[in-house]
Image (cartoon, rainbow, N blue to C red):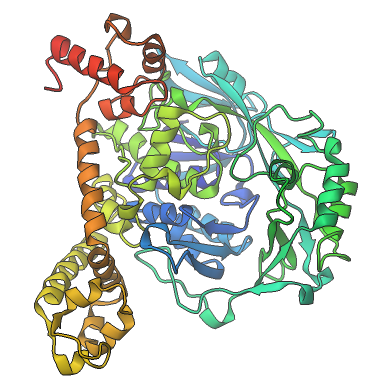
Length: 621
């Protein structure tokens, strides 16, 4: 058999990758260990969250699936940081763990140019340093022109609870035993990482009177720019807030050596920003309590997840008997029944410094990687990489220029640049603080930033493109209107006693006025719709800050435009510091901007490199 593209792994990265290449028109094969697990959420039953919600919007803007399927599967929706500035606002949905993968599988099952096969890939076939196919565990060879690996946490994965170590993928699924060996033989540096998941609790055994209810927002939100969520705002499922306590901390400290991590049974490195509960207790000894959430997983009554609550923030690798004591120490869970015990999982990944910004391997041509195999943690980070890898595999086949998202264009751009420039020794999680241009990388403007890239790739159609153009026109029209339209004094007195005549633009910029008051004075503003209004209000209110951010981003763009030739020999660049020479050779940056972000490469090294490039290549004048 021969395919244009083979995608290995049916998680969130694999979904976006195979959807992208097949929709663009390439004959694509998705190989996964269990077809029923396509789109599975093995850990948290949610989509979005701080910074991650923006990534979901970016995926949708590019033409991906995650946002659309999440909108069909919502149990509860919130806008996080809604009372704060627009740079940190993000959507988070409690998603139905049964419905989300079912909807995703139904969608992919009807996708043209896509074949789905249940099998385990164990070997990559390479000829003349170009990938040409894979070999499965049953010995079958399948040829391809491009290969995208999105293997998640399945490479030589092991489940850990205390001293017990079980060779297995998440939830007892088949693991890949030999694929990472194949990668190692091809020259990849293999790293060992760890993540974990909390226990699941029987909802019928919980005392909710001892907990604080956490409700969804009363407003209606959608991840997708094209479709609207159908959930009932007034019938959203409840989450519940509780805390660890002195008893919980005592039990953990007394049994610390029994945990996989502190007992010395873990070889992989865990995520710094999503630590286990025992790690929190050890690292933050001064804290008397840690916040936890009980979250519903599914409302599908025939689902195994129905009446099974996810104990968010309580990830652990303790033995089962200790987990029982830990859970029962929590208020409201004294009589709780554990349906599924928590565990840690170790797995192989590759050093992302061996991957280019297009997500194509630097070692083997036409081999792309995306998701946790690149060292990331989280569904959204994986999906964001998946769509970029899919687009770039298609671009490689068609001879088009690759898609490389800059740090000032997308959170996905920040994520990929961090991976391929700085590398990682622990599961990388996207944080708002990692994005230096976050004021212009907002939830509300993802379509304005990225939709044209999706159109150029072939994932956005003419109707979607036309809708974007109409939105831009309406934004421009509304911006002109608010600068010209004045509020008369008698109208202004309703919100500002003795106020002077002002334009709407001037009123919006005032920090002491609520936007709703202004909208009530001018009902005609509402005809532009919520999306356009939100965009114009944010651009107006934060105009000075946004303008400065764009100026800073323009400096970055000029640095990104200064390309470094692929054949450069850093040994020939005189006077480079030895550390800088080593780091530049290891990363092989594409641009001066990327080179400047490498740890150990200082401004003096960049100046020396610029002089060398001008002298030898006649570049970067």
